[in-house]
Amino acid sequence: MNESNKNKQPKVGRKPDQPLRKGWTTGSCAAAASKAAYLGLLTGIVPDEVEIRLPRGELPRFKTLDPIISKESATVAIQKDAGDDPDITHEAIISATITKADDNGLKFYAGKGVGTVTLPGLPLPVGEPAINPKPREIIESNLQEVADQHDEVLRLNVTISIENGEELAQKTWNPRLGIVGGLSVLGTTGIVTPFSCSAWIHSIHRGVDVARANGFHHVAGTTGNMSENALRESFDLPDEAYLDMGDFAGGMLKYIRRHPVERVTISGGFAKMLKLAQGNMDLHSSRSQVNFEKLADMVLKLGGSDAQINLTKSANTAKQVLEACPDLPLAKTVAKQARETALATLSGQTKVDIVVVDRIGTILAHEGAETSILG
View 1 (spheres, rainbow, N blue to C red):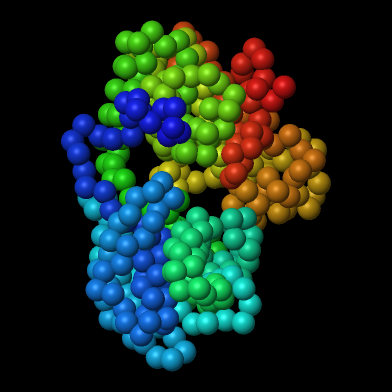
View 2 (view 1 turned 60 degrees about the horizontal axis):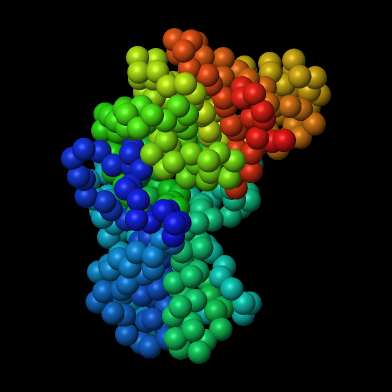
């Protein structure tokens, strides 16, 4: 929330009625382990606890475990606390090994239990360790702080490991995504906010209620921060009109069918809006999957080449298909079909528009409104 909004009430839909204990992402734990290891490498002493700074300014502290220090390297472990979230990595041991490098900046490596990207379509190149971009930023910013305090230039190799990560990864979609050898290091904010499905859907319903009670005629359901931020650039809506829909498009739309508003805008990434276009109401990766045969048929009908059609049939991710078809109006077609799905779920009293965004929040398509926000 920006400065002008910081004193307003939190958006409805962010928290369930009963408070649940938050936890820390694998990215936060990796950053804490990395910072403690770097301190050990520079000073010869690993602190019993280490504090890190997260993107929103939080300063959590972590107990350090099993430090190993030599002249060339330092290794420290952190045990993950996921709070009340049913996270398979809760209590996992995440460790970082730091060694000095010749080149400026950081070079990341996958240790035991951390996966490696083997297929295109993910936000990391093939061959890179599955340490996502945001956790890398969190690790780098905290290591840079240590370097500045000790008048050092940041030149480090960072190896992240997760105990039993390879076994735990079999319970995730990593193998299907082409991430082999272990888990991904994830987390955009560094904080795990626990929600059960029922609590999250309950919060969406209460968000609709508040919007109606305050006379808001237009609400926006978003799948995450990126899609919400994209809408904020184009719509002048109050905070309370934004519904943190997450993956529960059906939970929101079915409630709006019974408690109508004049207009709902649904915003999400290409893959999630594609799932909605294909008739899925739950957009989570564990509960619905992109039908690539149907997507290949869409590419065919849009005039795609044989190469594009064949790539789509064997694609790893929807993003891979989108990038392979820059000459086709894929996002626009997905937005149209997602709108049809949404309209079919509603009672006809609510206008619907769909906004498709990319991974950095750029709007790719907008369908349904009288005036397109794409200009």
